[in-house]
Image (cartoon, rainbow, N blue to C red; front, side):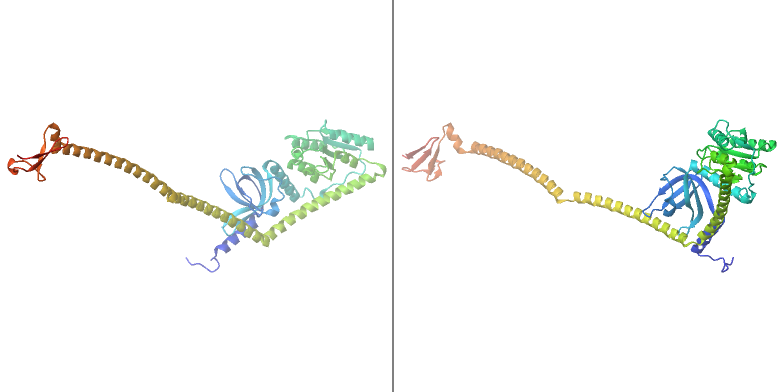
Length: 441
């Protein structure tokens, strides 16, 4: 098989093109997974692995991004992250560059909310040109809310104060819980079948994201969009924004504000101003959504060619090399410490102090043996001397003198034969005690 010039790659070129393909085709994704191998080097970047029961992927969250995370990630924690797939070119590993991170519980609701909002915006349900104007002369208002909630009491109080002539028809329904979305849809459909009111006010008091979750339902969004009767959404407090607010013809920040919007006062100036402000806010939100979508696309294209991405690659490589260097240094220090302990042990074994101690013990042992041997030698020598003296005394002629014998000497010799002497010779006779001088007659 022959290779053409066009399909011969270097490793760097291959990894670079794979990175561009992954970043260009997948774009931003949401990932729900468990954290492991979390590390935070001195650079401030975060490196971690996200895994499930069967697979895992390496991730990086750079310093500029992780400063917005409101909690400290720990190993074993379930999180929801948003990021872009990329390739760490020096190692050829594909990874996820995390842009935002949320705990799994809150993050899933936020993700579903954002996904549904983008989907419905793309379908045109939020478009300003589809919004219907409120009737000029409102005689009857339909209120879709809980029959026992504080929102209904606030609405009735405001309407009674501002315009007692307005008739109110309540379509009671649940406004919280799993079945609430379908029940609210049923109430909208019932009002459209009866056609007995000029406008519908969909309302409830404030609450958490979970409490207001029934108003972030796709079926409810289509029911509001398809309603023949104009709908004012007044859900929660001013800071709360639901999907029903985006789809409704007019959005009021609170239940009381919704009632004021639908009722007249002096000169009706406030209502007109509130209506214009509401429509302006609707147009601004729709414009912001449209511009945010375009900005996201432009930002995504820009990221593919952004030098900061290359810088992040180098920063990640630097952090990786720094961690490897720290591990290598620590390993080297451990080896040196072990060698030092071994040398110290060997030095102690070869120390002169130990040798002197051994030799001192040996000298004491030899001195003790020498003392014992010398005493034994002198004792044996004394015994041999006594034995020799005894033997010498046994054969000594002097010992016979004690039994009455004597020794006669003549001319310094022992006289053993009478023929050895002549008449007149002097003899010396040795006795046991003393000597006797005699003359031969």
